[in-house]
Image (cartoon, rainbow, N blue to C red; front, side, top):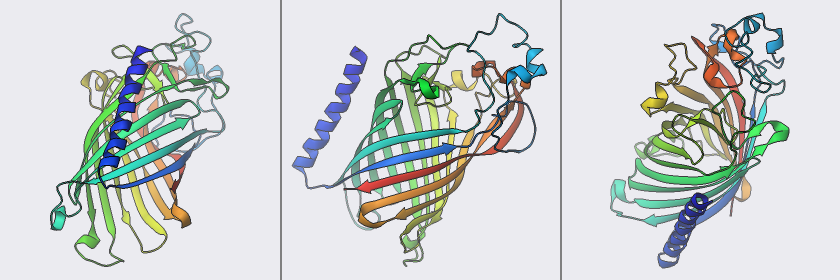
Amino acid sequence: MNVINRKSSYLALFLVFLCALNALFAVDTDSSWGINLAYYLDDNKGGSGGSNRFLPPCYVPKSYANSAAWQNGPIGGDPLNLEANATRKLGNGWGSLEFEVYYRFRAVFPLLQGDGLYKDNNLTLIVKPVISPVSFHVETEAQWTPIAFAKLLLGASGGTGWPLHILGAEGQALNNMDNIDNVPRSGWVETYFLGTTLQFDLAALVPGKWNHVVFSATAKAQYYNNSMAKDKDAWYWRANSGQTFNGWEYRGDYAIGYQPPWKVNFIGIVAEHRFYLSEKIRNMSTIASNGWGSDLQKWRFGPAMKVDLANGIGLTVLLQFANGLYYTEETSYARWFQRWETTQDEYIKIDRLVLQYSKKF
């Protein structure tokens, strides 16, 4: 509880500091609220082996009870290894939903402005509380634009989560054993990051309302810390895959597209790139060793369209694909991912459809 109070105080102090700056200086401020909704297609999680480059959607779950390979394998054949809730089906028959609501406050301060590429130099501060059915956290971020085509980023967030038993979703829980019925499900999760964004608009070189071909690349080093987790303990956060660890991760976000002079503000391709930076995690169970793939370079990518509607309303639609690893049928029915053994074959699948709604005040 003292940890939670201390971290909450840091966030509160940041908010007070932000309000004080707003009172002292004439700054550009705005606020908005929004909803993010994602539907994940169902599939068999690459759990019965295979080498096809595309993993198709599948709404017929596979059960370990019908798998001779599992029953005769190194895990299913050893009753000492598994308990009642230590197995899983491959798929659930309907997919899954992700839902969150947020409020976002942004303040922009002129800083070291000059001429040409330096005329819009500024410092932007952002505070964003986010609530989902299984978690609550607050994100804070500082963005310094020293030159038109670059931003330097610094941020922190903190929050907590809880289980949603009716859907079997874990907002925050350790994932360090076969059966996690009795693991801790409380505590504090914090993240810190630093990074940079490079951005380019063709219209800056070739002026014209039809010339907005844009590119953006953001690279971050982000540190995760769960107050409950020990060294090399995996944990769930906000109903994710349960493969989060205390340590550093690389997070890349890229976009290339076109901004037409219509209500459609952006049409293009966006991509996310993730992998563990901390060697003790990245080398824990590598693809080459037929482990669960701690060194997998994770990608999520696909087409995106953002529409600016009337009265400050924005709507973004994304269809995203993702990569993953095939696992042997003899190990894939284990609930705990540390039991899985990859075949070293990789696939691409249709991952999710995302709708993002926002409303500016």
